[in-house]
Every structure is written in structure tokens, then in C-alpha cells.
Image (cartoon, rainbow, N blue to C red; front, side, top):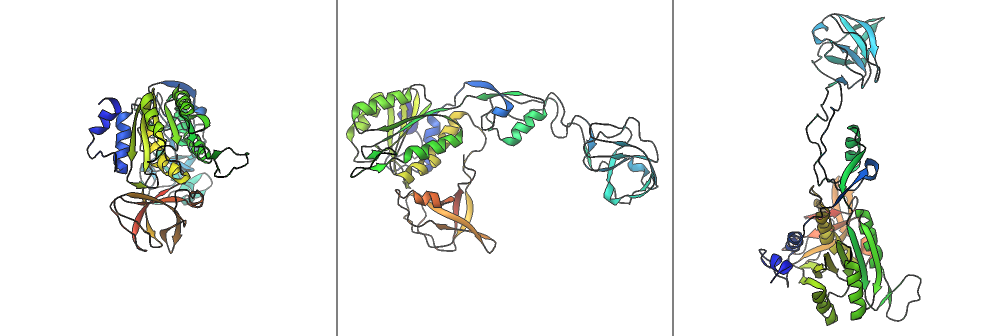
Length: 416
């Protein structure tokens, strides 16, 4: 044994004929080393990219002690008597003098704290007569003051390599005056669908044919991940065509995704061809939908051979491929799909011994989050995905669920 076979065969609980979902994820990760190549991009272009360098502030943020509220900059020791206003401080226009005993300065949010002051009293509580103010009791030293470096401090790292850059991170980087940032290069992913029954959009369907939808769902899911996409179309169930497609897909790609051709009973040449071109394992995963799956390498590219049924393609992508691709891309933050808790709004049938991903609708009723299925749950019913807003996750050992029981859900919204 060598390579991938050797790695996964050593994993505890590895059984290719009845592989648990969590074991399949572990097996994939164990075989993958994140890409090393990176590039420098403008901060505006870094959204959705994986950071490849430490971000260490060279300035404090904020750069000066400033007011968090509109009000008056005062000395806390003087608040037992009326104060005299001696000037004002605006954001970007500091007060030029110093606050002495019995004095205060009118100050706006973000303005530099005047020398001598240590506290800000909000304007709403102050009584004012001309240039004299009276501050009510109960104020605390340093209230409403933001100190230099309170957000980001010089020399203290704030973002580490592997961080997935979202809008907040772009703003944080920009607040340090950084215009360019080093990120991992984008993953390159090639994919194609297999099957003599698949017809392209615009063609007239012949008897026994169906329009190819898997390439469109794959394209959408990959597009949302921000990878570079190479769609090789539909490949017929013919050895020479399939070999050419696999070789072409693997050339220059980090990962190849195929749909169809991995089920028990499929043409024997699929298994033989994948073995010829690389090292590929065929798994029967203890899950529904999406039991048959292939994983391995063709050339330097990792191969994910997904089932052909439309729903199974989406389920296996989100439960396995997404996780593996983010690992390959170099993310080291928590990108697992959150498993939330809801109450079953109806009885759900389930056979113990496999993990099920039923398509569900999460809704709120009497201040409780409840979930129901979208109805028919066949792996070819793509409408069940369109009508759903979540997966209902029924654990491996769990049996049927009664209405009112708690169960896990994975929301579609925000999924990348």
C-alpha cells in the first residue's frame, strides 16, 4: 500500500463499505496539505480570500485618547462644583490648550481628549447656564473615553495566516493604513458531469434523456466559494472520452469534481480508469442521500467523485467537498457548518445506522424554532433543495423522530 490508501487505512474506524460521515471527513483532510502559493492583492480585492501573512499594527488604533460620546471633557476631581467651559474639541480639530481646575471643554465623538482632562460627561445629563455647567453626581473616572491602542496596539498581531477575510477584516486592515495584503492564491477546481442520458440546455430531449442540472448547482456552489472554475461540460460513458476529460481536468487543477459513475453497478471501466490515472478510493458512506462516493488523486489534483442524483450532489458537496476545499485553500479558522437546535414540527422516519440529511424549512412559532421537511425526500427531487432553507441532520444511531423532539439543523443562508 502507498499514498492515500496507506493514510486512510490506518485511521481508526475506517471501513470503505460502511464509512461514517465524520470518518470520511477525517480521511480527506488526512490526505491533504494546504496550498503554499500566495499573492499580493489590494485590500478591496481581498474579500473572501485566505490571509497568507500576519497583520501586525505599526500604529495604534485609535491613534490618540478620544471621546466616545458628545459631551464635556472634564477632570473627575472637579465635579463637586460648577465648571467653566473654555473651548471646544471636534473630530479632527483638537482643543489647543489644557483643562485646568474648575474648567471643561465641549467635546464631540472622536475628538482628541484635551490635556488635563480624564473623563467625558454626556451632554444629556449636564445643566448649562451660559458658559457654566453643572454635572450631576454618579460620574466615574475615564467614562466615555477611548484610549490610544484600545482597539489595535502597535506590535501586537491582530490577524494570522489562514484567516478568511470578510468585510470586518478588510476594514480592520484598512484602519492600519495597509493598502495591499498577501493572500493564498485561489484554488483551481475543474468539474464535469458523466452520463449518456444527460442533455445540454437548449437541446430537444430524446427518450430517456434529462437536462444536466448538476453542473449548474456545482458552478453555483463553487462560485460562492470564490475558486477559479473550469467547467468541462458533459462527458459520455465511453472510456476514451472519460480518460481525456480526467487528464484535462487534472492538468493545472487543485481539485477535480465529477458527478455520476461511482455507484455500484456502474460501468466497470470507471473504477479501472481512475486506478490507471491515479489513486482513487471508492466508498460506501453510511449516509442518505449520497451513499456512493469516490475520493483520491488524479495526477496532482484531488478527485471527488460524487453521485449522479441532483440532491446527492449538493448534500455530498456541502458535507465533504466544501470542508476539504477550505482545508486545501489554507483556512484555519472555524469554517464548519454550524449545527443548530430546533424542534421537530412533525414525525420523521429514520433508520438507525446512517446519517441522514433531510431537506427542511426552519420557522418560528410561539417563540420557538421549529423545522419541518419539504415533503418528498428522494435524491432526485431537486425541488426539495430549492424549497428548503436548511438540512435536518439526523445522527448515525438515531431512529425515527417524533414531533416535539429536538434535532439538529444546518442553515443554508450564509453558507460558503
